[in-house]
View 1 (cartoon, rainbow, N blue to C red):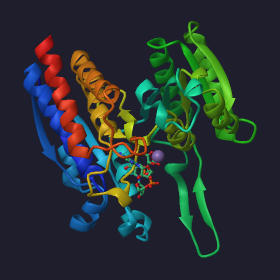
View 2 (view 1 turned 120 degrees about the vertical axis):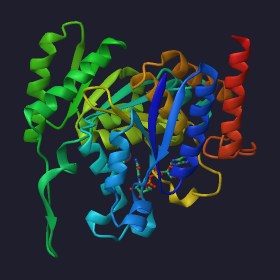
View 3 (view 1 turned 60 degrees about the vertical axis):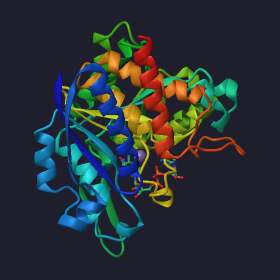
Length: 359
Ligand code: NAD
Ligand code: IPM
Ligand code: MN
């Protein structure tokens, strides 16, 4: 197959982890006889520096002419005091909105060889296998009015029925491919948007009698993610709750550095990025874990290109490298030598080579 991939490295560790991910994409192309046309674009802080715009028109045009987008991360202290329109994060929000990437899939699965780094007891974290389906283009992030004065500030939480319907449907659909359980997370004891959310879930579930649905409040969900995370299959929730719960869930596995994500439009077009941010304090030193970016490439192959064998090859290689006891600094046990971003990526490439020779 021939595909065009737009790569937006972004800021901080973004360029390091996307470089690693692109290397893996190139190995897959070679091994499986695909052609990936890779073109780079600016987003976030570097785009502000160069174009005075966190999402320049030429980046939008590049993505529009691509079959999928791979993104690193945006943000950093250099731009933290910028006015809102000139913040790196604005670029990320704008690209999600522009491409209508409403469905953010964030899988969280425990890997036995990483559990030493989990803050939870091994027996609690062991069986974790959940998928957070986060609404990504609505809610507090985008509601108007949103402004501030010296004395007060306003953000608006608004959801339309249609916005809720499409994300809930997506959650039911993906649950069918998993264990058939959906936890819909809201704050319906307080918020009007959550009451509407619950109503829509109740209506939609009629079309999915095979799916087990549970409504949960976000505060107790935050607790249950720590006390009994293995109980969750699919979690569906609004934008802000999903942002918070997915960082919480991510550390169960040992490190935020291993969690990939897909942000999808209804026709399957997607942007793929690690769940983690730009980690400015470790940037440029080869300390970043590239696993989340590499696994985001696997999600791209799977969801946007239908390349399931290729995606599994990457996942298997990453798992084997972990099982063999090779870790970057975020996961290495004390006293153990940590591999650099590049060394760890080379291990994954070796592993893909081994797989290929033995198949
Ligand atoms: P962060 O995710 O960048 O970092 C949180 C912690 O995890 C830090 O200790 C960091 O060192 C560590 N970490 C993250 N990714 C890692 C990796 N791949 N390997 C090893 N360690 C890793 O979150 P933050 O510190 O709250 O935010 C930093 C900046 O990133 C902010 O400007 C924020 O707005 C931005 N951000 C961007 C995205 C994104 O681009 N999608 C997501 C979250 C935060
Ligand atoms: C994420 C990030 C973003 C979000 C920020 C950087 C705008 O935290 O992708 O999870 O809140 O969605
Ligand atoms: Mn986040």
